[in-house]
Structure formats: structure tokens, C-alpha cells
Image 1 (cartoon, helix red, strand yellow):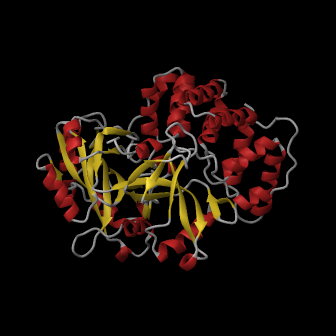
Image 2 (tube, rainbow, N blue to C red):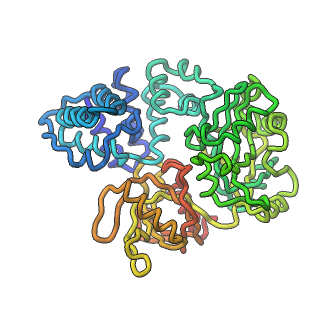
Image 3 (cartoon, helix red, strand yellow):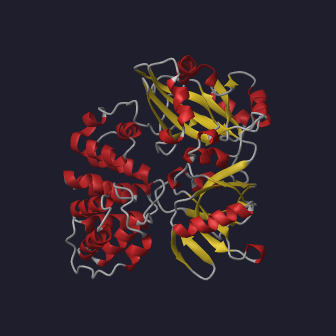
Amino acid sequence: MLLADVVTTSAEVAATRSRLAKVKALAGLLAKAGPGAVEPAVAFLAGAPRQGRTGAGWRTLYDLKATPSAEPGLTVERTDEILEELSHTSGKGSTQKRADLLTELFGAATESEQEFLRRLMTGELRQGALEGVMLDAIAAAADVPGEAVRRAFMLSGRLTVTAVAALTGGEAALTEFKLEVGRPVRPMLASPAESLQSALEELGDVVVEYKMDGARIQVHKSGDDVHIFTRTLREITGSVPELVELVKGLLCQSVVLDGETLALQDDGKPRSFQETMSRFGATNQRELLLHPYFFDCLHLDGVDLLDVPLRERNNALREAVGERVIPGGTENAEQILADSLAAGHEGVMVKALDSVYAAGRRGKAWQKVKPEHTLDLVVLAAEWGHGRRTGYLSNLHLGARDPDGGPPIMVGKTFKGMTDELLAWQTKELQTIESHRDDFAVYVRPEFVVEIELDGAQVSPRYPGGVALRFARVLRYRPDKDPADADTIDAVRALLPGKS
């Protein structure tokens, strides 16, 4: 398959806001891809090479002098092979070898293909929820049920692997994916509730649990073999030895657990989210004050529990972890909320007891109740500060995720809520993901997610989504989240007066 076909399809997807049109374009391309092209084509269209980082930086790629090819001839397969070589090039002579590979790749590409490759390799093709659109396209191209594709993706964790199975083996191949202890499952997500009362009325029989201000973890144990993953499925086992030892001590042979871990103060209240996240990279074991609390059990001693109701999973959870179950209960929801807030946590989670574990999806079966409005938004740019903030990147441009797979949609700016320490960190880090700049601002690749507290939203023609944030202020950056985890433009619009 020619890379030019992928570039053309990518442009078609970017040019339309119609989800159906995006799916049709993607499915049309995938249906004609040969077996060797499916995996790299899906990775390219989803916005990143399947190899991840290739060792070629932004400056290297944009300074590269390679005369573009007059006619398209570069294939997807050859592009993938070169990227694979780049990802493994290191040591003596690697600089020249990398330069030779890049020259070969870009010399074989047309001008439009060169620009696509630069954006692909620097992360500028990231398109948030394109993942969901791609899953629908895979189903359409393979003529298989969408639910079968989504479940296989849930269990495999990789779009490319799911696509290859669907397009080469159909529904039968998709059903071969099972929960595998040691391989992370995409976490089930919660939706914001209008209020505690609305969540209770909508969900019926529920359990109400503390919503802790910690870091999401997924724990896998098979005998003494333990693996611990973040919400983005990054393995952190080597950074959290005290959690590994705790899990080894559980009285079960095999288990997969979902939970939160926190760093606690001497009085038992949680430290800041940033402190908890910093423990994942700590090297001094005395720094590691992480305390896990588990709220779901996906597998126990050879039995998979994804498809059984939460009330049954909770029984297995208590059997597996005992007192490590997150605080909560099925009665006195208002008191549980009050107790959670008094203990320094964010609020509560309200979960339907008859719900199955819908991994990787943000449904209504789990709802989060917090006293303040917060949104996770993508940083698009930052303006240089004035006065005391001269020399610092200060005023953030904020974008909400497009649920139909387009680039983030700008919904506002804020410079409020930033400490001097955060300003210094932000100024340094944002320039490492710079895409371009002008006299006023540095524009960045959509990689960082920041949690914003706000008073609501208002209709505004100033921004593309027709809505703007009211009195937005920065709470913290969320290194545990990717742009695909950010809140959508629909979540922002739901805060408009009269929508709740």
C-alpha cells in the first residue's frame, strides 16, 4: 500500500466533522490494505508510529534537507521498516546511521508525505478520540460487529493488534482475545453526575465509594510474579516495591485488581496528587509512602470476572484484599460523601451494582460526584507573562476533546491558580513539545492534560466550539492522562446554564 493513500485518507478525516464520513474514509482504506500494511496503517492514522519514539527529534526533522520525490512511490510497509530501524539505532555511529535512514525515508516521500511524516514522528497527528472512530472503521472494514472489535481492543490494549485480528481472521479471531494476567486491561471510566441525588435515582441499587485524589493503578498477580500499571497502561512495577510486596502477600494465587494509590500525611489525609505521582519515579524506598485502596476485581484464582455484576466482583474483591477495599457502602450515601470530603478526598463514586466492567469506556454505570466543577483539558499553547511573570509561559490556551476524532477544540484561557514552582516547570516543559511560536505565545503539540476548576460555561462566539469557560483556574497537570482521556466538548457544553 502506498503511503500516499494513508496521507490522503488522513487529510479526508481531518477535513470533516462528520463521524460517519471519518469512519467511511478509514474503513475504505483498511479494506484494501494488504496484511503487511494493516498494522502500520492503523498506527499512522491513529497518530503515532507503532514503534513509539524513533529517536528523531522535532528540530532534526524540520532541519532535514531532502528533496521530495516528484511522484508517490513510498509504501507503508517500507516506511514502517525504516521507522523500526530508527527505533533500534543506538551506540557508536548511530548519529550517521539515523541521518542516512531519515534521508532515505524523506527522499522517497513526496512533499505532502514529508509533511505527514514530520507530524507523525513529532506527535502532531494526535487526534484525541480518533481511537473510537478507528474502532468503528475496523468493524466496518472487516464486516464484524462493533462490540466484538471493542471487546478485543479492551483485552488486547492495542488498536493495531485488534485491527490485524479483525481484518485477517474476522469475528472468530476477535473472540480469541481473553483476559491475560500480566497484560493490562483498559480501565473502566466514570461520567460526571449532576448531583448525588440524580446519580442515586438513575442507577438504582448502588455502592457509594470515596473518590480519592490518587493515582489509578491496575495490579496483576500470578504467584510471586507481580505487575503494576498506571491508567495509561504504563508499567511502574520497578518504582513501587512496597506495593509489589503488599500484593505478593495477598492470600490468592492469581488476581487482577483495579484501584487507587495515595501518598498519605501523618494524620492519614492524602498528600497532593503531584506528590503521589512523583513516588512512581522515586529511587529511595524511604520516599515511597504509597497506600493502595482497591475498588474492583477483574480476575481471581483462575476465574475471569469482567462480565459478572459488580456486586459479585465486590465479593471477590473483599475475599482477595480484605481491609484494602476502598471505603464506602450501600447505605447513607450523603454521610459517605460528607465523610469522604472531611477526610480530604474529592467526593464519591456512585456505581450500579448490576453493572459489568466496561473496560475503556465512559458509561453511566459509574458516576463521579464532586462539589466543584472540574474538567481535564488539553494544553494547546501558552502566552508569555507580564510584570512578575515576565519570562514565564503563563496564560494557557485550553482545548476540549473532539468526540468525533478531530483536533482539540479551544474553549478558553487561564493564568489563574499557578504557583511560582508550576510556572517555572510549565515554562521549561512546554517548550520541549513546541510546534511553533509567535511574538506572544508558544504553541505546543497536544500532549499535556491539565485539570481545571471552573464556575461553569457560557455561550461564546469567540471560540470554535461556541462555548467558553467561566472563571477557570489551574488545579494541576495530569501526567497520568493522555489527550484521549481529556473531557469532550460535549462535557463543556453540559455546563451551560439550563443544561443540568
